[in-house]
Length: 196
Ligand code: AMP
Image (cartoon, rainbow, N blue to C red):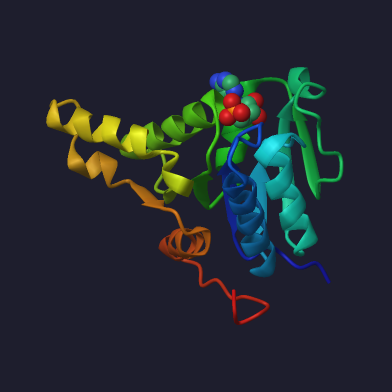
C-alpha cells in the first residue's frame, strides 16, 4: 500500500548553515516535525547548508522529500540524489513554480538572497490572490528582526498596509509555527509520538 503524505511543506532556507548553531538546529527540528507527522518536504533539492539538513532530518524521521533543482545548479548546489522524488528542471522559474504547485504551505527559515527572493515571491503572489496558502517566517534568534523592522517602517511610510504584513505568520518556535501553518491550510497534523 502506498502511504500518501498527510500534507506538503515548502521550505525555503539557506544554502549555507550560518554562524549560530541555532540555525542548523531549527532546520533539523523542522524536518523532524514534518517526518513525524507523515508530511512531505518540498525544497530546492540541494545538500548544502540548511537545505541539506532539513532534507536529511525529514527523511530520517520518515517523511518524504521532493527536491526540485535547475539543471544548471546541480553541481553547485550539490544535488541530493536520495530524494523520494528528484526533479531536474530547465530553469529557476520552473523550479519555483513547481515548488509552489506541490506545496500546501510555505515556510522560510534563515537564509540568504535566494531565500529572501523566494519568500517575497510567494508573499507577493499571496497578496495578489494567485494563491491562498499560508506563509510562515521562522525568526530564529531574531534573524529576521531587521526585515520586520524594515517592513513595519514601510507601513509607517505608506507603502504597505498592515493586512499585507499579516499575510505572514512569524514565530521562533518551529513546532508551533508548523502546526499553525498546517492547520491554517485545513489539515490536522497527527504525530507518530504524542510529544511532538
Ligand atoms: P540562499 O538563501 O541564497 O542560500 O539560497 C537558497 C536557495 O534559493 C538556493 O537553492 C538558490 O538556488 C535558491 N534561489 C531561488 N531563487 C533564487 C534567485 N532568484 N537567486 C538566487 N538564488 C535563488
